[in-house]
Each structure stands twice: as C-alpha cells, then as structure tokens.
Image 1 (cartoon, rainbow, N blue to C red):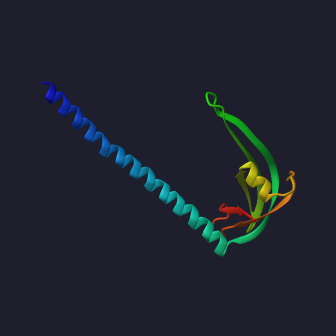
Image 2 (cartoon, helix red, strand yellow):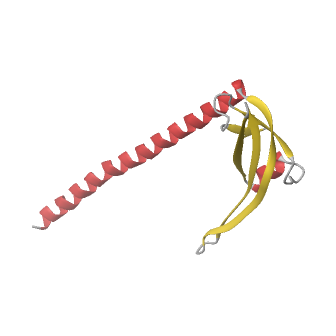
Length: 130
C-alpha cells in the first residue's frame, strides 16, 4: 500500500512540473512581446519622430518603502510635461531613477522649464526626452 502512495506522489510532482514550465514560458513570452513593442516604439520615434519642446508642469521626488520587513526603498523623479502638436495639447509623465535624472538634466529642472522631446508623428503620446 505504501508503494501506491509513493507512485501517487511522484505522479502529482510530475504533473506539477509541466504546469510550472508553461507558466515560466508564458512569462518569458510576455516579456519578449513587451520588449519588442517598446523597442519598435523607440525605433519609430528615432526614425520618423518629430522634435518638439515641452514645458515642465510638475517635478516630484517619489520616495517610499515597498517592504517594511527588509526596508526596500523605492526612489525616483516623476516629471509631468505639456506640449502641443498639430493644434492639440498633450501631457506626458516621465519617471527617472535618481542617477538617470542627474545624468539627463545636469541642472536641476524647475517648473516652467522647457525640455527637448521627440515624439511619434502618428501617435504623439509616444515620447522620449532628448
């Protein structure tokens, strides 16, 4: 009778492994699709994008603890900038890690400052900061 129990446990373990592999495969597939879409968006902006100027409307330094047990802290700068294109107004949010923010903006940005952006012609909400 114990042999049947052992075989039953082995069968359950073997069934669990394919499910886990499917989940891992699905996660990898989703990450690949997201990377592909993001890469194509940036490539389209670089090749066919429109240079523009945006006005900084707000700058926030976001700082919070994500897990109190291990005190993992998240910090980043969040910039909201407005710009016009083809008679329409747009607003875009940009998030930067502190090191990236300092490298991109040597001087401290202030509300009202102009920043250079480049966006897709067909979809002006696809934006990168120059």
